[in-house]
Length: 223
Picture 1: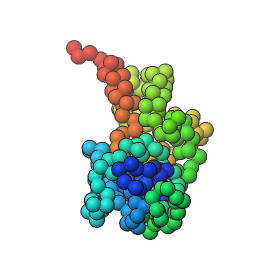
Picture 2 (picture 1 turned 135 degrees about the horizontal axis):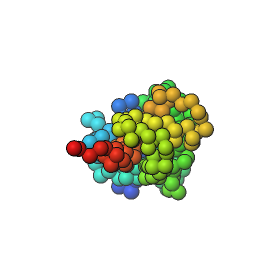
Picture 3 (picture 1 turned 60 degrees about the vertical axis):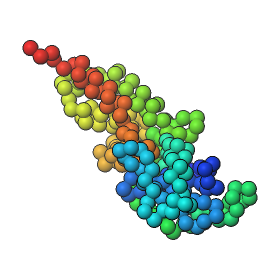
């Protein structure tokens, strides 16, 4: 079993694509209807662009196909799904699926994370009508909580560190969403890592920007 998004069909190729959670980060897998060889790419954390692997044939899998796959899979949440390989004709007929040994299995830890009730509850809470996980919805909710919490206000007044503030907010909101009152730091970190893999950006970027603003406003003026 692997952790991946649902399949999406490409218009640049007679192929389908999905994102997969790899040990080194998120990746893209493209599967042509007329070839057993998949096209693989990593995703740059710096530029957000696909980086096809050295053994991916650009004549079979051009860069624009990976770029389309990036756009179509952006924000789609990860879940436990079977490995796939397409066989047969392009999408006019029945699509046959079977095992694809060229794509690596996911780790037991990652599988346990996406199978957990707390991960599934958090993803469900911020998935929009298009079936995409919305960083915007999540950050808006967490920022509203930060601005209404007395504990957060006290921490800001004490000039607590950004990490301490963010970790408190994330723990409280994750526990409220999941109905769990004792999420460990390790479990929270695993969920955050999985959410971060949906897109090459920090899942809490807007929250952290708001916390920096709050800390700056509460900082005593220099003499």
